[in-house]
Length: 162
Image 1 (cartoon, helix red, strand yellow):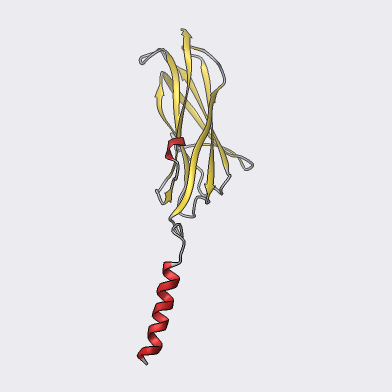
Image 2: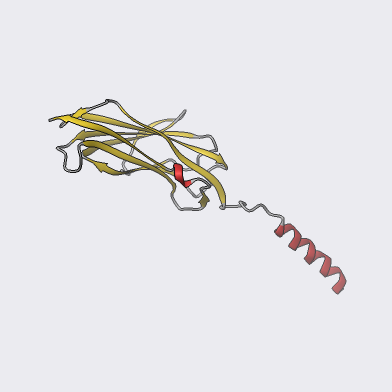
């Protein structure tokens, strides 16, 4: 009887050892901000600006169930944010009530999202530009990002008058 149980145990250990390193929630998801633009090349105090961020899941895996692909704006300089629009390319747009973050949920490898932030230029208190930084992240951190250096990007617009 003991001899029959031993080969079964060895077989189970072999199956467990052969499981891929990214099985289950340990996925490899390269979240990246690909581009950040503004609707103007320079601005005046009081002027309306639109910052547009394009982010993508570069894969190789999808953002898994139970996690969320998020894009958040951080470090707003010399602007007052008025609205944030969260867009999944091919699915539509919503105005986010969860500012400063768009929570997109599960996103397949290759999936692309756009975040538009509408802001007003304030009298400069820090430097001479209006700027906004966007960053991507997996909300609950269950995914491994193999290239975190592409997670954030900033757009700046010189303030030329008031």
